Image (tube, rainbow, N blue to C red):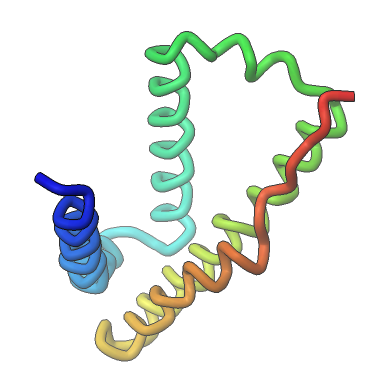
Length: 122
């Protein structure tokens, strides 16, 4: 398979999966509060990233950051994605799925506007 075809398939799969998010959020919000969903999402993300780092043999790098880098990472994590998802889950909790779904498409803009900083090694 050529790179172009593979890229197209990944793009189509992404759109297909992303388009089902509204239904998944609405179903989850029947049972959970937005804060509970946020806690589950954040915990899942930390676990997945941790597992990936262990598999790649890079877990030790988590403990080699400076205090400033930890504080900066924590602050940026509170803004993006925590604050973003708190707003998104709140919107899905209050609005019909078809009205809240366009907010989910602001994620690339939010990601670009609040990028993770790059750290120098010094």
